[in-house]
Amino acid sequence: MKDMTIGYQAAAEMTAAEDKLAVSVGSGSLRVFATPMMAALMEKAACNAVEPFLEEGETTVGTQLCIDHSAATPEGMKVTAEAEITAVNGREICLNVRAFDEAGEIGSGTHKRFVVFAEKFQNKTNQKGKA
Image 1: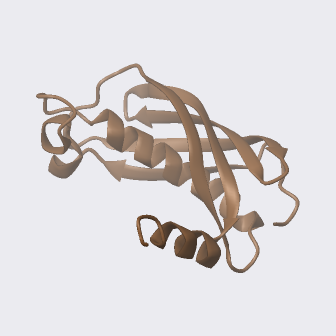
Image 2: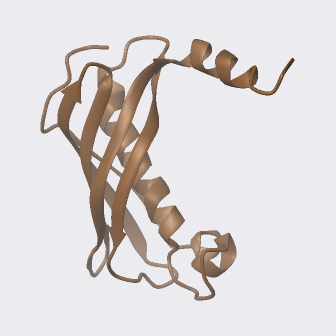
């Protein structure tokens, strides 16, 4: 892992399409952008923020996500998430995350990711449950 820049930011976006709505993903009965989709978008923005600092064979895994979903987004509206690196403790990376729709902020929180070697991590995970 290369030295990370505190304050480095990145974003990710998606549209609140049919398959991203609470009623479609099972997180509610309304036709509004689903909280799990906002969480996934925040994680994508965080991945985008740390990716430039990873060495070949490295990736990150999410280890903690603490968020508030403070406003609903209607179907069809664009949603953008932003992530900012706030601290690095060894291989643990701390980030602030925020999400916005076209009308304003819809969520915010903190997120932690951990740098791992992709192949080693995947192989170890694949061994779970095998005798």
